[in-house]
Amino acid sequence: MNSKAGRFALAAAVILIVLGGITLWPFGRTETGQWWLGPSAAWGQEILRSLEAIQAVVYRQRAGYASDYGAPEMSKGYEIRFNAKDRYRRDRYDDGVHIMNTQWVVPDGNGVQMIEVSYEYECWFSQENEAYGFMESMIDRMRSCVSLLDRADRVLATETFDGHECVGFEVSAAKYGDNPQGRFDRIWFDVQTKLPMRIERHGITTDFDPARKLALIHDQFEYFAEVPTDLFVPEIPAGYVNAHPDEVRRARDAQVKGEMVFAEVPTGLQEKVVLGLRMVKAGAYHQGNTLVSFSGQTWRQDTYSDADLTQTKWYALQGEPLEGLFEVRDNAVVMETSEDLRNRTFRVVEHTDSPQPWHPMRDILFVAGLLSRADHFYENAEIDGIVCFGFEVSAKKYGDNPDGMLHRAWFDVATNLPVRIEFVWPPNGTRGTRTEVKEQFEWNPLLPDGFFTPQIPDDFTLATD
Image 1: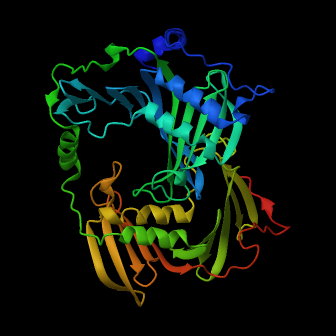
Image 2: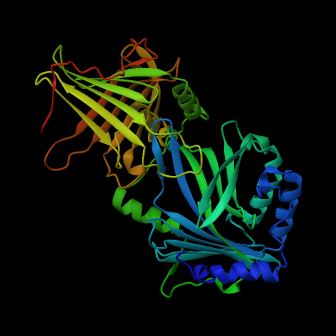
């Protein structure tokens, strides 16, 4: 771990066991040594007592993304979180290398003070008696996980983290709080110490990209029986201005991207659109001279010249589902098979590196997720004879896209499904404005058996170029 705490990792483990007076192994041991197969009430209480002796914990938080329409992805950035019973700290590494932001929450008289420093925008600000939604207590999160183990849905295969053999459990998040079906947690314990080594929280939905679900991953745990107070001392670099980083960012964005406007979008409409799309089993649309069809984890592109079919491409997502810990899998492949009917050739390509070809539904859901950020909302429009609502949103509202790049989309008011989607590129000096159009949508069409299975004629030869 690239932090001051990392230098204390081994010492901290010794302090925890020796000074904390914790007996971690063995207890409640079965004849095979697989204590997790014994009654959870016994070893669960032992783990809870062990956690009581912990005064501070340091860990990493990362974000993973899972989708029915693509391979698992891991965010480049991460956070190092320092969590004691009465103080907190978070170091954020947005690019995975450089620290971009630090927040501290420390005792201040009868209350607390939150201090945040942005190294990216060279500013800082503070708030008194305000935890600022900083972070939950990780020890409390661990206790909550342990209390649920008697309701675990399954025991996971053992994994090795940082040289420690660990056993894991999976439990539906619907068994606590008001979490919806489909969300679940996984937690792994060190077989020897029985302390948590990794926690994953799966199935978290996000408004921005409805095609993907978020998994929060906590790992690289370091436990402390004494609080290393030097880790919680705020440090404000000389010359930094007293301002909220969001204010500085908005001012810079205004200079680069210009003013951003937001339309009034009916409450809950985006959720209805996303729900309708998630119910779709198959679909098709035209994009220029190409017919795009999709179903499940397969899709197909048929390209025409006038009325003649000239090329077909078949795509299929391959790779085993994530049954254990979340990780970017080497076997996550987009298989592309194409045939050129003019030259009577074919080719097969395995896309293993990022970025891979996007499933059409992932692209459609991404656009739907921009509805709440719309610049303009149209309550009533007629597209191809269909009564629609629609919106327009500037692409400068995400990423580093320039002013003038935008999305437009129209949806059938009866079904909430797309009727037409446009993406506009602004002129760049060598060409004028260009618009990509998806139109003539068909939802849940009846497609023949084998439609998404590559069918190459016997006399076609493998392309060599």
